[in-house]
Length: 197
Image (cartoon, rainbow, N blue to C red; front, top):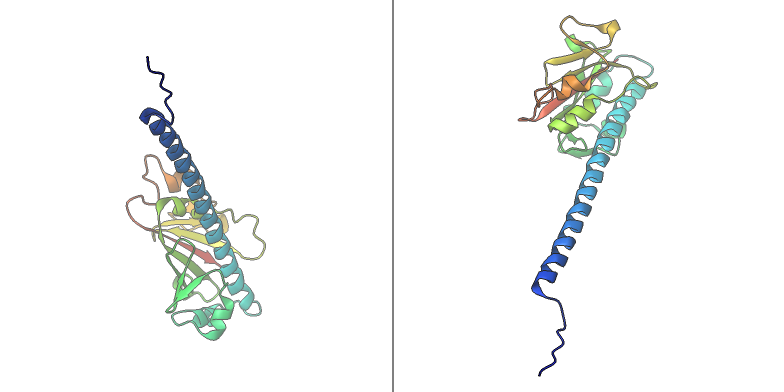
């Protein structure tokens, strides 16, 4: 009679161990990915507030924003670079926000020099929803006048209300919609324009 002692792991045990390791790695990867996405939302929101605040402060004496905007767009001057917060990426006079899309600046509706806009292009649906939902009610430095989502969905404060527009603050059900049919598109990139005075 032979007495054998098996050493090592069987194939089934090894597959079981590997499945557990893969599940743990995937869970950690999902947690890291979610944390990075949250960081980008936070960064994009901070960038927006910092840029609007910098433009407002640069025009503190005169509410005419045309001179400040001219220093930043279409060609960024040295003085314009000093106005722009360092968190933005700049490449060949193109300003890029935290989600990688282009940042555009300009004067408000009807070439009003006392209103300027900041526009974020290239937003996927989720960042569009989150950035549109930013709470502006507690801001004491900059004054938001309106938000325009994808050039057609307008949101105004009651004192600036425009017929056919929505009333600020932005609501999640309007931008997210039901079954993905809200103001922030699922199939294409989105644009948000914030108007400040």
